[in-house]
Amino acid sequence: MTNDTQTADVRATIDALINAGTTSDLSALDQIYHDSMKIHMIDTDNNLMQHDKSSFIAMLKGMVAGNNGQSNTWSEYHSVEAKGDHGHVLITRKVDLGGADRILVLSIDLLFDDDRWQVTREVIFSRPNVDVTTS
Image (cartoon, rainbow, N blue to C red; front, top):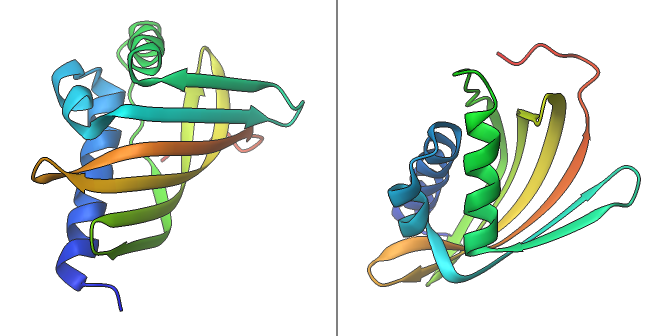
């Protein structure tokens, strides 16, 4: 059975991740992303991008710098689970990726390590947002 306190803590970690990612808070991203974190992003054309912690933070920093001060924290949580030192989140986000409105469906694995929840892996499916309403 999932512990309600752990589940709330996992969700709070992802909320903090969304805020840090949209504001390019590099210190917060460094704390939330585990040192061995891996990102796998695939789109509707089967383009696969893979990143480690440092390359993904650098990519996010570049995207935030190019969004003209606009940030979007829109999210829809589908599932938040935690058991022991492992957590999982399934979430949909609407974002601007390099000037293109996208919908991201993310499967995020977390590990409770060093007294905090940290993201160890994100598997992201990216598709065009045909409904550009983001709020």
